[in-house]
Length: 624
Image (tube, rainbow, N blue to C red; front, side, top):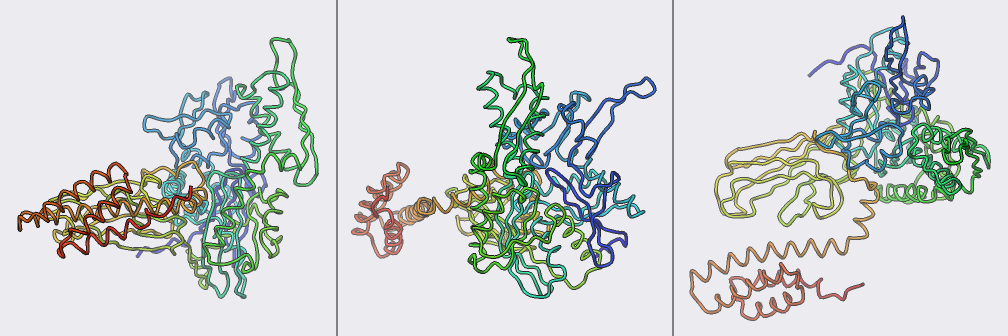
């Protein structure tokens, strides 16, 4: 057992738009201001040319100073990098077109951002590490000691790859990342630090690039996460983009000029749109004016943007985003097995919760009051400091019980997803399921690790594949293969497989997986619900196929042993059923199984009856 350092451990909210660092002082978590004197640091890194002693040098700028020069240096200024961390390029291709800098894939399909000034590519982890270094250096200066340990928060719906990528960013920054903590859980820790009364709290966390909803039971020194839901591709950036798109379309209609091709113009419009969004939280209308946005070669005149935007128009532009906020909100309550009447308090987290339409959505959906006492920009970092205090032994009377947001399992025969750890299970957790071979004398098994809620492997997220080899030859179903899933407190997954007779084992630590498909995770869960009936039919049909294989094998043995006509007939019918199964001819299979039942001997009567029962659902009329 390793003893933790007695040095201070800081809590870091590594945000899409802004980042915050905090520390526990006494029994109170406090925000550490940066060297510029601000409590939040823009999550922006830039490379800028500088002339010094008649020599051209390139400076690395971080935070506010990087933000100030974004318009003049759009190609070398990197922001919203959190939306790309732990991803593959093909998963964020559309989002990459929304930023002014160049995002491109490397040879392995991983994301790289390109700086023309340096003629160099950077990974999202590297850019994130520079932001983390800035936060830690400022904290070290403030605390007058060298900070080397940290708790870093991530969205609850970050998957294994994104969590590992965030941890790698910390390592690149020279940090020992002691814990990856879910942002809504951190917010609850900060809110409930001194709460003695039991409450059910809902954390509604809408940040710059991600969205989470978590339901927790807080009080009696225990913080238990009951459920979580969310969307890793929804945040304030998307609300900004709705305005950007409206401005771009309006300008193109007026002047037939596509400003997306002009990086400086795009960056100016992005900044103006963000400013307009913020203004509309306090006023009912605003005017977006951007002079000299471009020069029209055809008319030889400079063009400008004059765009009127009121709150109702903004809400119309973002109606689809608000609807995307509502689904995880309701899902989290449902998964916690509660109703809206059971929620005692709502904590709004993230700058985007200042949008009036967002607040109205939450208020109209839930019965309880919205808590106005916490700062939505700071509460996550404060909670991370509380967790740091727990790990350092400064806080000894709090227990945190978190959950995993999505089911984890393996692919089995017929492409079925077999869950091992179900969504919203408390973590850390270690569970084992038993499997076997699918064919006779099979000496290796491919173990495909999946994440998601759909019953078929192809509809879920593939996290990794490994192979268990040198399995002793035996009839199918005889080898006993135990597969163990171990999920740690950071939500990071390890999978082990062992064949019991031989003791042969293999394992995988999920390190190369990319994030979930671009569709929001809440949409995946919604799809699972909408397709439940169809998925059940398909799943049972795969089960039928497996039963047919068993029956076919048994019939072949009986024919060889008895050489009776009935068994020959059975074998022919089973062959035909298998053929029809491959052709998806359901009704014909039902008819043949009835015929099979008529000639079945007692040896296989139970098998046939079971298959006919499996087909009963197919005889129901099609709802469509």
